[in-house]
Amino acid sequence: DVKVTQSSRYLVKRTGEKVFLECVQDMDHENMFWYRQDPGLGLRLIYFSYDVKMKEKGDIPEGYSVSREKKERFSLILESASTNQTSMYLCASRSGTGIYIQYFGAGTRLSVL
Amino acid sequence: RKEVEQDPGPFNVPEGATVAFNCTYSNSASQSFFWYRQDCRKEPKLLMSVYSSGNEDGRFTAQLNRASQYISLLIRDSKLSDSATYLCVVKGTSGTYKYIFGTGTRLKVLA
Image (cartoon, rainbow over all chains, first blue to last red; front, side, top):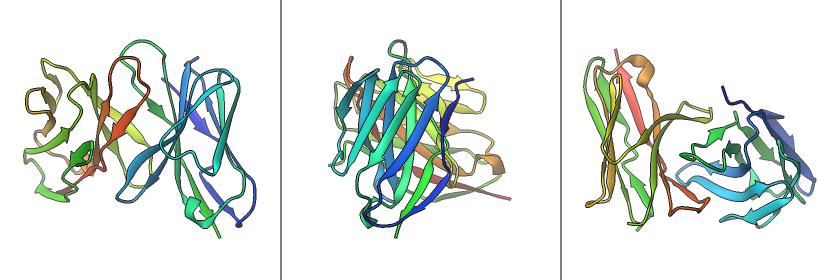
């Protein structure tokens, strides 16, 4: 089974803090994604990485950056957390070929106070 | 118009009932379609991919209608454990990494 592991289930941070969300997958997938999910808005793509050190902005990249130094690990960074970044963050991975099924981590529920 | 639209529900149905959800999409060039299930405060999990010819997995049947640009999910003999939110997911043209998620349809199966 594909396993996508997010480092924290719940996080509480203060406004202005730098926040790191970590995601690790064990299936040697080329592609990895970071989404946020908010009520009534569905999942929105923040960043996508199609290979090591490669990244593309998604629909809502403002206020976020990412790092992919190793194939299995994709990190989301909130440079200076703000209250409007309180959300559920979901990491996903998929193979670069085939039928492109995405597999999700359990999510990190971030509260910024 | 949203790129992917779903009725948010909730659909409240008794155990054993048959229930169907539809999902419409706006991009006629969309290539791949999926239904995910999401339990409260959990991550989405793949329920099934949707193929042009339709596909069935036990009590679940998915259909694709390209002419009318919608996909459907039929659940027969509903169980209490089917209570969840069902997300419709559409992937764009070949080579794209973009997946468009519906906001989900909430199902409650009642005893």
